[in-house]
Structures are given as structure tokens and as C-alpha cells.
Length: 294
Image (cartoon, rainbow, N blue to C red; front, side, top):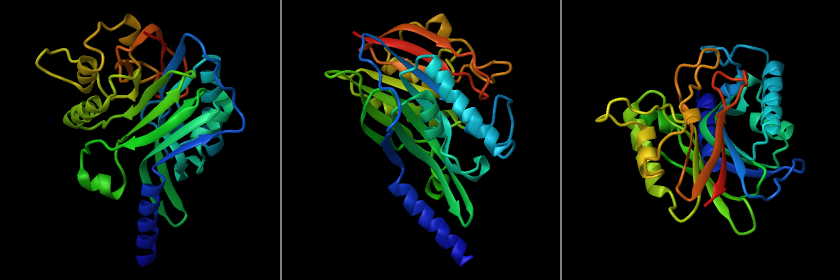
């Protein structure tokens, strides 16, 4: 028992030391600086596939690796410049301890990776480390973990929390973009709203900003009721009208009924195109938006 506790304690300490990491690959195709750029958000569901309710432990490790590579190729074919990925395994026993962020980046020719650890459990011969990842064809000049309010504080202390990654990306020699990678708490709306308010307070109004990921949130249908998405639209986007393609359902992939995945932007950016990706590689569908700076 003492040995197991020792491994666990070491893993938690190590998680604190490695909760954010930025890597530049020797391979990959940097983006050509231009007038517009495309951002995507994709919850890859630990590589387990498109069937809703499938266990993370099901399936073959090789299949999961091939699926991660297929996601990378799909993003490359879709001409994505920046992508926020949720539920990415960095070192998890249920996926053969693969680094899915690296597999996707290599297959998709993304030269820059930022990893943000949300959950970390290490025991002898066993590991569960996963979180958010941000892949970019533009240089990532800075990245940090932003702690968010926890649904259950003891869970946050023992294993980790649905925190956020905030990265600064140099889209050209003079322009920098802030990208937030988000995967909000699934179990409690009050926690999601609190997280959204916390994030909105930290958005730099002087810099073009994108917030992307699985928000586990929809627009409220009852005016007095507020959701995390309402908070972002009200504070970050000044309640702009949603485009039709932004209301298309993204979950579950095989029979979409709910819109959980979003790309929200600040007034310093103009959205010129948006869409839903036709990919059956996860139980979420990917979302895309093309932007230009105002």
C-alpha cells in the first residue's frame, strides 16, 4: 500500500510540474501567412470511435492509433490551421499509452503542439493522463493552464479538473491571436457557468480571441435561464446572432441531437465561414470557422 501511495503521490507532483507543455516538431508544414485562417474544435473521445457510450477500455490499441492518425489526415485535408482537441490521451493505459496529440500532429502536418493535462493518475504499471491539446501551423509563442472552478474540490485535488489552456499564436509577424482550449464540466451547469464567467473576465479585449472546444452547453431556450454559452455570447461576442451552421447538432455523431461543441470569437475577429465536419472518428462531430482580423 505504501508503494502504491508513493507512486500516486509522485504522479500528482509530476502532474503539477508538467500540466502544460509546448513542443515544436521537426516535421510539419507551417501555415502561409494570409488574410484568413481556419480554426477547428474536435472532441476526439480518447480515440474510441463514433459509437456513443463505448468504453474507453474497448477496442484495440492499434485501432485507436490508426484513428488518431486518420483524425490528423482529416484535419489536414480540411485545411485547418489551428485545432483545439478535447479528451486527448497523452499517456493512458486504455489506449496503449500512446501520445494521441503527437500522432494527430504528425499525420496532420502540424508543427506546433501545446498539451494541457486535466487528469493524471499514475500507479505501478498503470497510467491515465489526458486533457486538452492545441495544434497549430502558426508558432505558439506562449501557453498556460488556466485553473477553472471545480465541481468537486476533492476530485480536483486527487486527480485533476476540467481546466483550460490559453495559448498565444503568431498568425503573422505583427498579429497575435489568443486561443482558449476548453472542455467544460459535463455534470453541473452551475460549474460550467462559473467557469465561463471566470474565463470571460480574463479575455484580453485588446487582442483577437477565439474560445473553442466541447462546452457541454447549449443556448438557453428560456430567457431567465443562462448557460455557459450564453455567458460567452453575452460577454465575449456581444450577443451577435448565430449563423445557421453554428446551431447544427454535433453530438452524438451517429444521430446528432445536441450542439455541444463551439467556436466563440471576440469582436476583433470577423467570421467569414463556418461548418460541421463529416467525420465518423469520434462520438462528437468537429466544428470549423474561418476568420479574418477586423
